[in-house]
Image 1 (cartoon, rainbow, N blue to C red):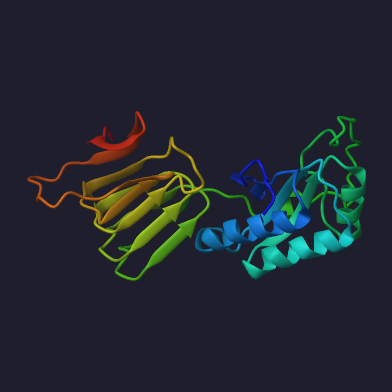
Image 2 (cartoon, one colour):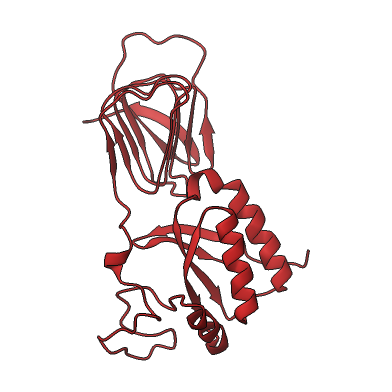
Length: 238
């Protein structure tokens, strides 16, 4: 594979996900890189709507169709392509994709846009469900998996064998004894809180911590966060 300098960037936005890809290297390399990245994160990302930011990369209609197919194979919907190159924007519009995020007051060349938005060039925020917090009033039992783009609050326990993967914080108003991954899209400021913390595994962004073997004494509310590059547990000041 050619040297495709930058890594793929994925972050949550109001409209779903914004995925940024390198604008250098061959199209074949881009497809290969994107295929690997989406396959690795499929369980968390699937079902999302995606705006793809391609910078100055040139694309034609066939390229756009291939990219749509890659996303569809991973249960993702490509709804917008954000491009600096006019021909790439035109190819996206011809396939009924948006070329800017809703609410933007300028185009990608910095030109002021009229308040009247043509439906084929932008997607209204009202047509895409916003990402927010998820509140679950239940105990998550073994085998249950929760994937959410946002914060997750569980009013109940998270039993061994259950897992939560969230792009934001995870709060458990009960006993946390399963697996929790907060900040799953790379947010190192995310935290995990629980009234009783005895997990099988905790992750924040790309950091991993495993519960110690020795049993604890009296349970106390704790918060887990990244401090100086490491996951640490501290008293949770409710």
